[in-house]
Length: 180
Image (cartoon, rainbow, N blue to C red; front, side, top):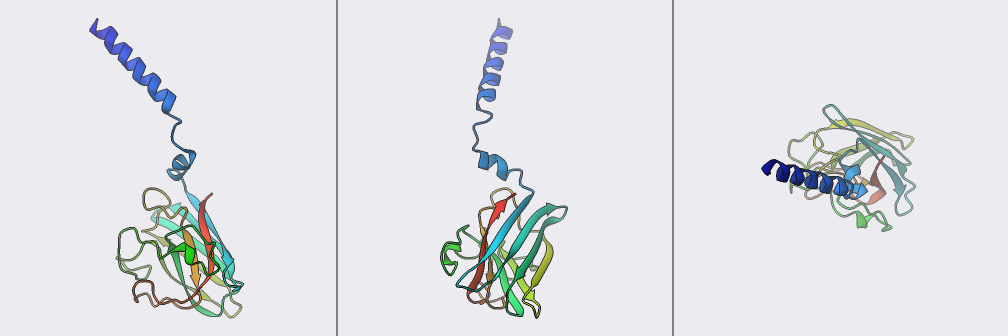
């Protein structure tokens, strides 16, 4: 008799699990399996700055590859910001740097930094900047995901030390990080 009750209970649990297996929202399922994301940068305040940033999970971290155009030659602060909202003309709607663990602002190679600190893009004489590095702090999955955050390019150089954001000046481009 105990075996029959145990079998009935096990079947009821299995049936319940099968009925609710698909009950997680699709965005929750997708976030658990993201291996690649892209942010398409659009100009802010008529800057003309545009480009693409690709994030790909690989052994050792997250590969970040950016190609940005129409910059003034030189260094430009480059960060992931806390909100995936580029609607404001000056990209202020993106909020501050993505910093889920309340760290100090620093450079991308510093052991303690904002999760969104990527340092500087360096634009050549034609205004093109290429960036390629593997980051061991940023992730596409879990509670600290950069999915649905934004990427900001600044008008000036990030000094990698001024708090809270590196004194990089106006926001000249913004793009939301979206899973691919």
